[in-house]
Image (cartoon, rainbow, N blue to C red; front, side, top):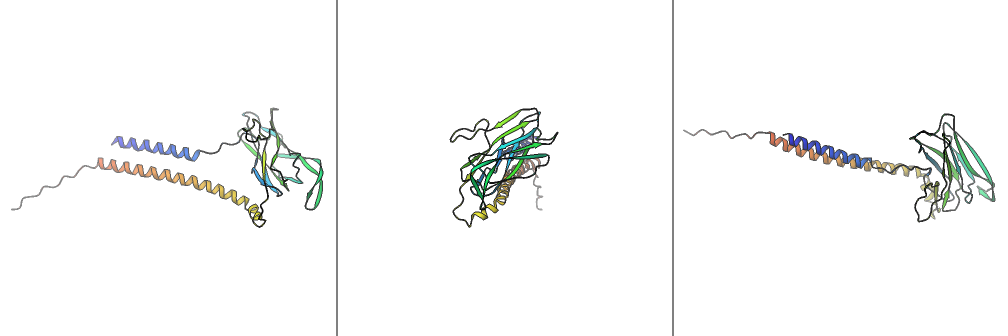
Length: 250
C-alpha cells in the first residue's frame, strides 16, 4: 500500500518538473541595446523602439544616445514621450535634399539623446523602451544605429559595432533595423501594414495557445498515470470476497 503511494508521488513530481521545464523555456533576453521590431519596409513609415536592458548590478542607466546612420538619412523622425526622461534632437545638413511628401528637406535628424530625471533611470534588473516613429525609410538593406548607454556610476557601454556578413555577432553589437523592398502588389501592402500589430497579437496568441496545449497534454498524462496507480492500489487494498457455501438440498 505504501509503495504505490510513493510511486504516484514520484510520477507526479517528475511530470510537474517536465511541465515546468516545457513551459519555462523561453528565448533569453538580449543583453545589449536593440531595435524592435527588427524589420521594416523601405519607403514606409515605421514605429520602432530602442530597447535598453540594464546590465549593471549596482548602477542605473541614466542616458541613451542613438546616432542615426549618415548613409541612410530619414526625413521625418519623431519621439514618443517616456515618463521620467527628456529627449534632445540633433540635426545635420543633407545633400542631396530628402524629398518628403513633395517637399525637399535639407536637414535630417542625426542623433537622439534621452536623459533620465534626477534619481531616475533604468534600475538593475529592469529594461526600458524608447519609441520612435520615422520615415519614409531609405531604400537600403539595413540601418545601423550606434548607441551609447551611460550608467549612473559613469560607465559608458558603446554598442557601435556593425554586423559582419556570415560572421559571429560582434562583442558590442549596434542596433540594426533590416529593411525589405516594398511589395509589388500595392493592394496588399496597406493591409499588411495596418495589420502589423494584429499580426504580433496573433503570434503572441499562438505562442500562448501552444503553451496551454502542452500544459494540457502534461496534465492529461499525469491524470492517466495517477488514475492507473490508484486503480492498482484499490485492487490491492480490496480483500477478496469468499463465495458463500451452499446448503445441501434435503
